[in-house]
Length: 459
Image (tube, rainbow, N blue to C red; front, side, top):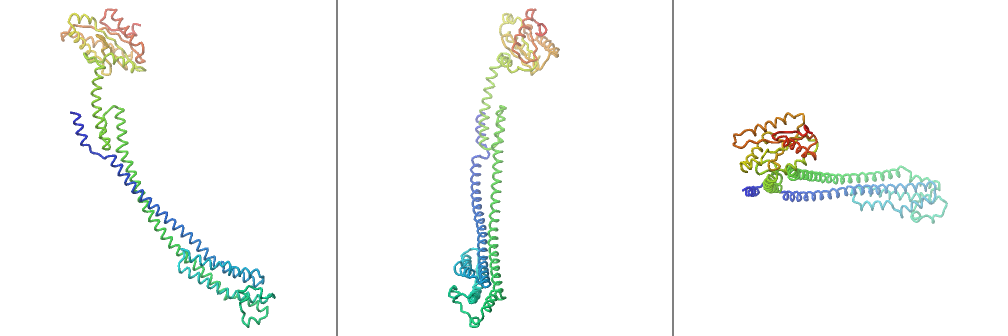
């Protein structure tokens, strides 16, 4: 009947299934991990874009500055030439203008760059045009200087040699030509042109900075948006992990701890946790009840006397093992006087009734925590724990009470007396304790029976 009830209860189990929760958590976690991975890639792309913008800005700024630097280099060489008339400055100028060509290369690089817009290019183009316009004056100035050097003009570079002087300038003296050449590269008109080059270059840089900042703002905004989404996904995933952890605690860890304690304490399992644990608990409890019933029945048969219901000799021997140590106790060995005569005179049925009467008398006379046992045919043993010699009066009272109960003849049983030998020990059940109690019992029998003796009083 109990098994049927458990089977019916098993069918009605309600609870969260760990397997279902596990599959759900894995699926949701995988989805959010994919989202986070995707957002991480987006953030990485935005970061690379931002880094590329910074790198492009650096390159474009260098190229824009390079045009102004090259223009200033040409100015420096032409001025040194018109002042010193050293050919090396003229040659350096020509090499920069026609071989190195940093100005043109800078503009070409910027035209191919991603960091510069049309507006920036227009500023740089104006700067290059202004620089090219100055090269006309600079070549003319170097032609004038070449006329005053006293050298053959045929050795001048072709571009300078082919620069024609006006009739008025050709008619000037060498000193006047030199002065005019210096004026061409130092006068206010030349300086104004140089200033316009710097302004255009500066405007180009400002435009590049503006375009770069706009691109950076776009990348940063997109990155912040991606990071915000990433934080949301990570927070959700964190909450899922917390929820998973809590469910593991509630559905698995807590039931396991409770079940372990129940098993250690040999108790039935509580019906809690997930569906699987509830099912396990019900199955375990069913087996537990069956085992307990069988165990209780077998233990009772093994440890108790079937006639009197008292613990038997097996229990007495087991008790000797577990009561070792510092537990003070008193051991009583009890025999029914002339019990064989009772059996012979009144029959075994009456003898059994006498044994039952003695057993009940002993149980009533001693405390519930004391151990009352039948260890043989008419032999009984009692172990009183936590009692000392100072409590000798308690023992005497117990013996008087036993004799009083046994003297009652209203039950139609023959009057019987007991011989009792006792021994006290403050070290628990020592090895020779039984022998000492037996000696005390023998002393009583040798001295007329129907009495009580404490080993410590006679030895």
